[in-house]
Length: 274
Image (cartoon, rainbow, N blue to C red; front, side, top):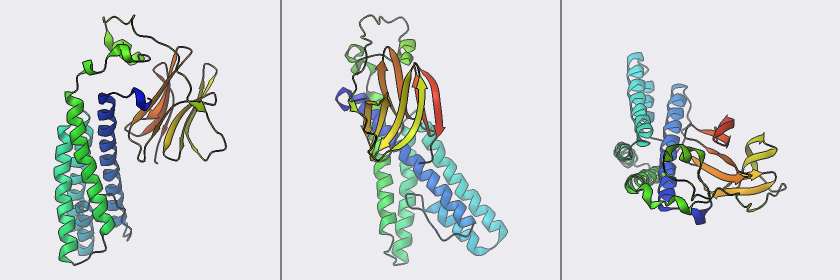
């Protein structure tokens, strides 16, 4: 979706999805840290929670089997609570508040640990914790906005097209006033620019390419860029275009999978690690 066509609801959803994506990333990195401690690795990934890591580390130091098991169980319980907050936040933004409170406790514990040991080398760890707190707070703010914004604030008649999902949910509403017309390409896609192809597919004689160039994700159809969005960290998102009456979509879902859809049907899908 082009920025000039964005609505307050689009902006709130993008910001909220970005906060949820950062929460999920933190959970994944924390889980990796816990596994690496269990494997007796000295490596610790930043952008993660401290308490689960320290619990397992202390359990391993005791070399007592029951203490190791207890520490792993507590760490797993904390991660499951975070995961519950992430999953349920899609239904209600209030779960982001729970995640913020839990991570604020984690940040306080981390700060106490560094202060009590007079170890001031963890600047990046502190910075990453602050970053996560910021995104969680942002998620609460925009989640509340998203909850309060009425669908009436996004007039259907101002859209270039209506998606197939929207046609189904509109039910008996009149759709004669909705102009379903072809999208105009933004520019020709440069082949010699450094890029990473996230997913490709062919349908109805179109070659569809979903790629990333620096910080820009692009939807390319037959060599033309039809939609693009710039972002440092990729939250779930959808790029859309209408070509010869066919709705073509590409993006990243929350699981996370790259996907390509044509007329609402998924024609290509791939799990994304990065």
